Every structure is written in C-alpha cells, then in structure tokens.
Length: 416
Image (tube, rainbow, N blue to C red; front, top):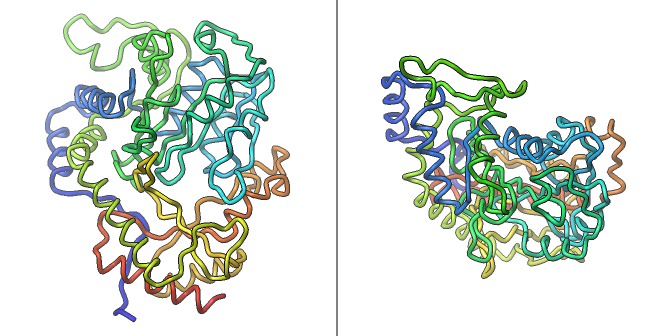
C-alpha cells in the first residue's frame, strides 16, 4: 500500500486567474448583476448552442423558473425520476403542482423513455429528466416515446407551442456534455445548469436556464426569466444606471435569484479553462477504467448480478455520447447497504472521501410524507444499495488515482 494521503471528494479548482478576475470585479465597483453576468450569458449561450440562456443563482432557481414561466402550477402534474437529488423534485412542490415519480430501468441510473411516457396523464405538463454524473439522458428517445401521447392539453400561449409535455433537463452535472453531437442546453426544451462549488464549472453558487427554439420568442423568454429573478421588476440595476433612468415597474411579485458580477467574473475565468478541465476529467476517468480493468475487478453489467465483488462503472464515453465526467459512479456486486457503507468507511480510513449518488427520493422523509413508498421503486433501490462514488476532480494527480483504485479494491475484498 502507498503512504497515507488525504483525498477530498470534490474541491473547487481555483487558480490565480479566477482570483484576479474576482478582484477586478470588486475593484470595478460593479458587483451585482451587470456587464460580466451578461458577458457570461452570451459565452454560455454560444457554447451550449441554446437559443437563449439566463444566469441565475442556482440550478434549483432555473428549474423552478422553467416551471413558472411555462405556467405550471396547481392542478398540473410533473414527472421526475425517483433516482435524483431532491432539487429535481422540490421545485414541483414549490409551484404547487403534483409530483409524479418514476422508477429507473433495471440496472440503469435512468428511467426508460417508455416509463416517462407511460406515466403521462391529461394533467401532465412537464417531465424533468435528469442527466446523471455528466451523462445526458436520451432525449431523442424520450421525444419519440412522447409522439404517440394524445392527452396534451395546453393552458397558455407558451404551452401551445408543444403537442406533448414540456421536457426540462436537470443538467446540473452536464455542462459540456453531448449526445448525438448535440450539446447539453440545445436538446431539451429547457435546460437547467448548476455552477455550484462542487461542479466542473463553478461560480461558487450559481446556475443558468437555457432553452431551445420551439417557436416562442427567445427575447420574451429572457425577459420573463429576468422578471422572475428580480422581484418582477422591469429594470435591473444595470439598466437603471445613468441620470434619469430610475423609473421602473413591478409586473408581479417575483423572486430574488439573480447572479452577481462577482460570481460571473469567477465563471468567465473558469470558462477560459473549461476545455482543459474537461479534457483532464476524461483522462482521469480513463485512468480509473484502465486501473480497475487491469486488476480484473470490473463488470459490464449487473442485470443479472455478476460475481460478488465485481465493480460496474457508469460509462462516461460512448460512440453516441460524451459525458462531462462529473461523478465517478460505481456499483459493487453483492454489496448490501451495510457492506457498501463499510467499504466507504474503509476508504475513509485511507484518507479517501467517497459519496453515494443518490439516496432515492422515496427513502427521504419529505417524500415519504408525500405518500411515496420505496417498495414501489425497486430498481432505484437496487442502484442505490451498492453505489459508491469515487473522488473525481481536476486537482487529482495520476498518483492519487492509483491510490484511490488500490484502496478501493482492497476495501471491497476486505468487506465482502
């Protein structure tokens, strides 16, 4: 065994470039939403191929904003995977709609397109599909499955642009990912990105809402997002700048979830480095794959379960898609929750911080209280039961990767 190290799970990759950019924003005298935020929006819009994009203070605000701008609320239903983080589902409760959960497919971190379609009713207004660990969901398959849906009942002008439920991507993990050559942000009807501190691309806290061209004015969508993000106010501080420009109106009692120029300055510096950060993440994934393959512990499938102790890795790169390589999801065949937790504890003894993605929503008190039962989502539980997320970030050295893999193999052998 190598000498003891400490390997955190997901620290931010901050260089002098980010520090200088933030300092310059502070010196500029413009620290709330301003020119840097608008510049970052333009760069991200072009990068994602979106028709429009607005920066906000979180992916959660972006998801909720998409629902509100689409006019989704009481009496409506929104479908969400049971295997996701709470934010994907909490926004449905925030707007007063009914949350409908679907199980993932057997042996998969994703629901099938058919499962989403089968859960639709005449009350269904949106599907929030989740891009897991940087791998985009198969939106083409989802759109195809929804083609035969005949229960769509649009309730406003925006909804009338569609003949099916609106597809919103929870792409918190997926900036820079592609499927079929199309980047995240340009595929789903709306896409929510996260720029939280642990994400590949960070503004410390932050996010963005992007949308494709579906026949509704992109300028009007942007205006609506701006109203939503700043109390329904018709002018932000940038547009009130100057003599005599103070006048404004409040169109409705909105929310407060705008991005600041301090955050955007950090994001602009990160954006210049992002191609290199993604390339390094790909190298790290390939190193883990090679190390575990060479050790003979990997398995291509857990459906049906393979030999106990074999490790299945989420495939980040395939001919039809490229991941942003956000999380290193693994599963250990034959591991119960207790054994899985013992492996994580052993990794901790070696100074390696691991995680679990995700505890399915029906296991959590908030969703139990809404009437969801974990027994109704057996595939989600099977994914969770033996899942271990290894550290994956651009501050890892090649030696760190070898150390992680060496101790992972040893911990599995010891605990099973």
